[in-house]
Image 1 (cartoon, rainbow, N blue to C red):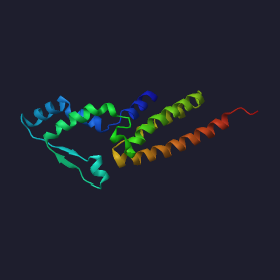
Image 2 (image 1 turned 135 degrees about the vertical axis):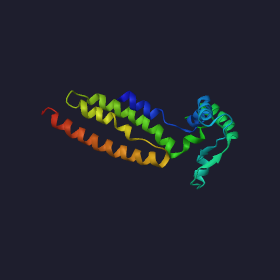
Image 3 (image 1 turned 120 degrees about the vertical axis):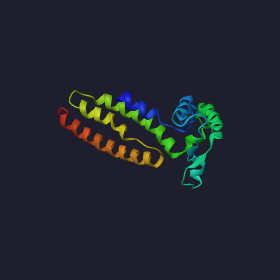
Image 4 (image 1 turned 90 degrees about the vertical axis):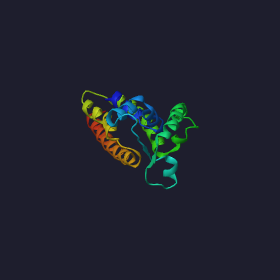
Length: 167
């Protein structure tokens, strides 16, 4: 479970990943297979810059925008650096923080693992499965995850105290 959910937290879909998926030749092949050669399509996006300026709707960008995706994908090496302009967004900072906090959580849980609390520890390790969606939906799910995590950890603490040998 730990490997599965650490991977899930690490594999979030940021702007660089959207660019990679958008220039994947398999996408063009799928479009051609479904709609025929020369089919026209548009990218429906909600760029962070426009969102920050208050725009609440997605915009349509034609096939010409594929070149921008190529450039954006090449810039993926900036991910996580101070030059990553997308990394400053609240949701991206939160996604990176979740990875570190989950690693710390797992380290703590491993020190507490016993045959008696194994199922509880596994249930806690599975909690990141709650984190789904994009942007505000994801942030709501992160709040629900954090609430559930607090409750499970409190129950684990109580259980540990009940099972601790008396001195």
